[in-house]
Length: 178
Image 1 (cartoon, rainbow, N blue to C red):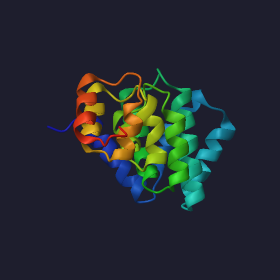
Image 2 (cartoon, rainbow, N blue to C red; image 1 turned 60 degrees about the vertical axis):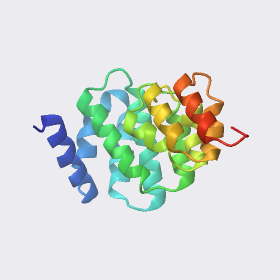
Image 3 (cartoon, helix red, strand yellow; image 1 turned 90 degrees about the vertical axis):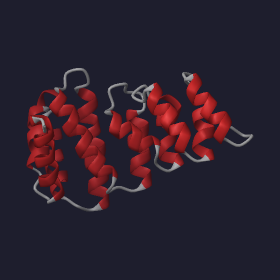
């Protein structure tokens, strides 16, 4: 049984991927309480551009709007922010993804799929999430410890709140440096 939220997310992401950005417009208009008119205009303009620089700027600005409204987003808005940012992550270069990871690592409300995607990215992107993201649950951390490469495991080993099950996985999988 598919939920209304699932249907809405699917419709919105299909439109976004097809270049019809009404989902961003709706999300942005609903989120206007978190930002000013200039930001709204910038987001709408960036949503129409497809260059790598525009995609990176759109991703960062969308993350800023998300952070401004933390604690007030509806479940549908959280899902939409997650879907849009995940889609943009796949369209941006490493430096932009690293900046996004740094921006969101300190936010415990970062959507789990986004936190996991950034934590499993190349090391420069993953490092902030692996070191300090509270959006990653103990189960997420254990799962990451079981599948990431040694460089990622070294960063994960330095995490202050490392669950014991993850520490066990690090000992089993990691090199002597871990």
